[in-house]
Length: 264
Image 1 (cartoon, rainbow, N blue to C red):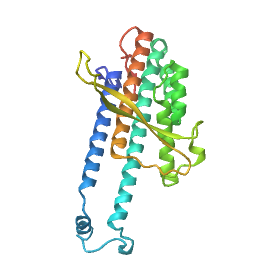
Image 2: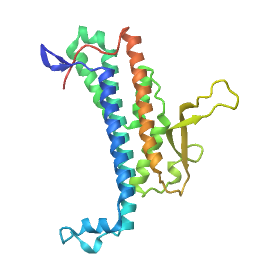
Image 3: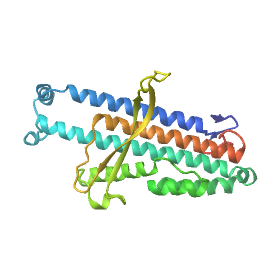
Image 4: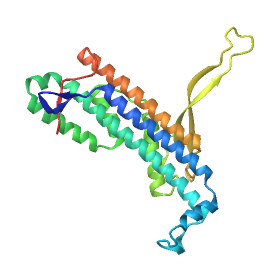
């Protein structure tokens, strides 16, 4: 929302942040579903027909067979999905951190706007450059916000590194204290009532599932697991938004929409 007196100022709120990132997450989910569906329909002759439409290739002797391109495409979808989800997670935390900083420094900003904006800007720039695990620590240290699913997201970041640097082969250095690299997924479970129960309507609820990899294992996820990662990130977003909103209400005594912040 623009400030009419100064177009360089803007108001940010948890509502705007949530709408932005949940919308982006849904688009990522839809595109992933589309790509997975499309990959199921591709046939070898159709692939070769498209590959040979222009009668020439960049390096024909390196042309991948149908089986090879299937494997390559699958790996690319998996790496890109995890990379996109982690990128959205980091960017969302950046936005929420800035909002919390503005809330925390509201009184200082009223008394000394220039120096306060400079201090907030410096802190925010350091936060944006920090690795993911440090961002979780900063939320707890600065605002008392414990981020749910922190371990799951750290494991996902380790998994992406494994996929990018070792072709998906897990090493002992990637494992947690229990000797595993664990991916967590959110799924929907339907619980049928026991026979003879007064209420016969099945209970539908979000449940946690996990996939553990050990040293030497190759990271490979099913279609449902890939899609489930997006739901996991959505759960993280909702919990983070609720925590930021609670921090704002506790600090300001009102919804988390601080005064206008000067743009860099």
